[in-house]
Structures are given as C-alpha cells and as structure tokens.
Length: 146
Image (cartoon, rainbow, N blue to C red; front, side):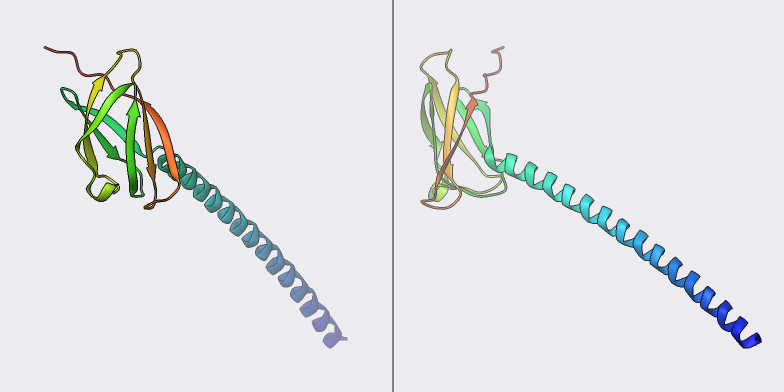
C-alpha cells in the first residue's frame, strides 16, 4: 500500500509538473508570437517609410539667384534625370554620367516663364535605361531681397 501511495503521489506530482510545463510553454509561445508580430509591424513601418522616400527621393532648394539645387535624398541612385515644368531649366552642373547617388546634388538654372506656375516635374530611373519614375514639386521661392 505504501508503494502504491508513493506511486500515486509521484504520478500526481508528475502530472502537476507537466501541466505547469505545458502552461509555461504556452506563455512562451504567446510571447514569441507577440514579438514576431511587433517585429513584422516595425518592418512594415520601415518599408513604408522607405517606399515613401524612394517614391519622392528629391529635395529642390534655392541656391542663389536663378540657381536651384536638386539633391537625391533617397536611398537609391538615380539615372537619366530630367527636370521640366513652368520654367526654362538647364543644368548648371550636370549629374556625372547622368547619375546622382544618395546624398549627391546637381545645380539647375531656372528661368520662370510665369510666376504662377512653379510646378516642376522630376523624372528619373533607378537603373540605367530602366523604367522612368516621376514626381512633381513646387519650385521653392527665392528668399526676399534685402
């Protein structure tokens, strides 16, 4: 009888321990799932930010007089770049090999045809001869003369 009681106690203890282990394992699985979901959300947010930046990777700023600076603020190099709009535009410093890498700039001389149309269309490709992308920006105003 003592052996049977000891076996029963050991069985009950093993049952309780296995239940505790299963519960703990379930908690760890849930925590891992929450971490994976959070990581996926962060990755999606980062991808959205990158897509937004790559979709409009240009910063157009006034440099001096009729000269404006076009800077690639995206993460990819840009090829076959053109700028046109409600102004006559010519490159002052043309992009070397028709390419502007991330963070690189070129300058443009812009002669406005009409002060009302400051819309500039920038076209580029992310690889030489690749599909053309475009975005439209307003030409920034010159600072007031002093």
